[in-house]
Length: 419
Ligand code: 5CA
Ligand code: ZN
Image (tube, rainbow, N blue to C red):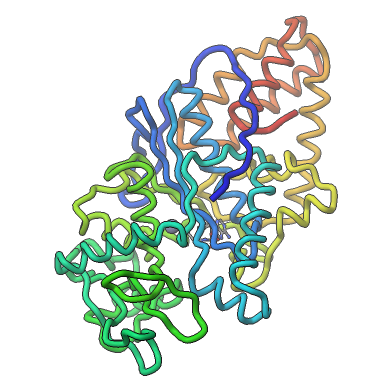
């Protein structure tokens, strides 16, 4: 999978602080990475209707982490995936009468353009589900051989020339950590599993929460050679387990994504890693949900504001980025015209404040940005620090030659906002 071009990163004086992030599983603020190489896996898109503001907010949040780690002197290894074959993509292709591969290609390309415009640093490893199939197959074979997975017979007509080889499911009962979603009883957990891509009612499973690892060939669905598993396609959670391990090793620093991925996706993905003897992510970090009109923005609901549409309307991507950064990443918030208008005014003000040669000293502002980001990526506080410098620059001015340049380069390097 091709990534997008990396934005240039200006060098700035000084060094960032060690970054702490909130681990969703424990609720604790933890050191993001002990270094010297910080490892990050962020769940990528399912390319059927990209890139809405919710996606943008999630990738911008982890881009802040990436930038803060670099500023702190760490080397960063960042991996992400593209779920370029899965039920929702195939369903959308079937509904709209387009070829699923074409849809995935177009939407992946559009996502890359949006990420470029939003100055998101690209992942170092970027893998699609389809290109990872051989590794998924050998991994599922290992789980079957180890007794952590089992076959479920398929319905008549499924399974191609080997209908006797069933679908493969992970046995979650071997992992007592699975299925205890905070605040939900068992039935509610099962219902949530069903809403988020699971198939709790599938006959023949040992437990309603068992997720598919390998889905056998079905009429009208794409399928690939699965060796002893038979023809089919990968389950969703194992895709991320395999790609993260392949890119970052058995243990890595942070697994990220939107909060909608907490359960079942990240929980199941972590359970698969444990079943394979790998510790997986040291911390799970989740972003809040961006909504529109009070409801979560989602491809399935169709209440989307697309980055590409805003760009076509002439909206400066840096204003979109500032609109996102005005909210703490863990917050749930609604995209509104007012949110965008406020960000546009802020961007204009910042641009006019850095337009001179001289200004107030920027050193303490740069440190304030660093301090805010090190404290669980507190972007709103970082923006307020920049506002304060801009207010001073525009009202009283200052005589430190080069200060506006230092501030502009710092805002670019740390916040990804080009002023
Ligand atoms: N391909 C899978 C992950 S392996 C997937 O969830 N794809 S996605 O296209 O549906 O979402 C891509 C990323 O955007 C995920 O991290 C998801 O949690 C996040 N996301 C989706 N909707 C929103 C939203 N409304 N607000 C914030 N983040 C969101
Ligand atoms: Zn994922």
